[in-house]
Image (cartoon, rainbow, N blue to C red):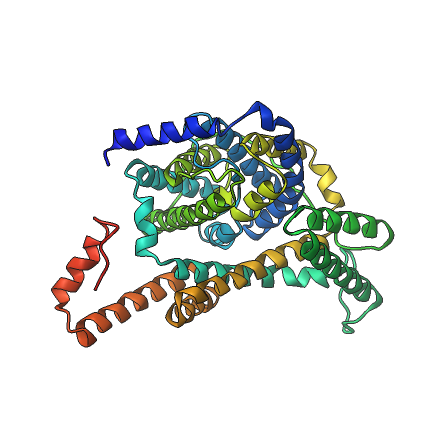
Length: 439
């Protein structure tokens, strides 16, 4: 199908389903959905920003900007109808690694180059090949390893002593017991509300936990969230690298970040299409357009990367969203807390930790989805997760991907007696034609 034909089909689809940005008949439903989803998105975005070693206000600004771009592009190049953009938990450790390797002052360049690579992928529609090169079960393994990192990062906050109280040789002090008891109650409350409302009102567990945490902090001394005020400035993302090796590493780092971001978006879009209330189709390349533009804009104020996360998007769907107007509402509410960040200091760390440990556990349990691909996929996905956690995000994925291809090569050349040259030829042929399978 030619490019013009593809665009014609997209235009017909948009006309049949109405505007992805706004439809008057869904106005009230989208307004409500935006408010409800923001209740969940704000603490989740705070936790992801902390996990990424970014200032909280920068994380929130990234979400607000991505929401605005997502709404604007929905008018003429919609990728999906109810996807809620934001910073992704799956990218948090990668960004944290970038901050550690390059410094927060150079991360704007990394995000800019990420968007540049994504623009190239979007231009040539290469996103459709990524999941062919990197199997879904390896991506799930990657996310499971990252989820384990997130869970273990926030777990200590469940028993962390309040600020100003020094740890003694005795672990179970009265102050420690207070924090552990509150954390335990919070876990039980969140789990109960999640099980009861996950399929109807998914924001309630987050809202209930936050209210419990805020009220508890009034009566019991606990560690509270500290929000660092950021002086936002618009500037060109010019890096300060001293060696050419650091330049090369930065360019490679941005490429991997771009690929992981795109793969996550493609996987999210597949799930968003299934949960769309009107069964409207998604266009991953259009979603990628919105993502790279938002990422490029984000790099100008030192922001993070974004995508339409499945957790926020599913919450948006269950909250009653029909169009991207709900996303605009989310952005407006988050913008309020950017400028009134003092209100966020009422959130205790233990409540935020419960949310982030929960997010990490969900990412780990994503490996269960791999079981449908068979024992080999489950084993390799699990290995990928363990390597990502133990060795490193990039190293773990590359080692597992190389092992996967070596196993295929051995099977087809030594067991099926396929000529090695034919194996290599058929490997690259599958990128020319989606219907070609190795046999």
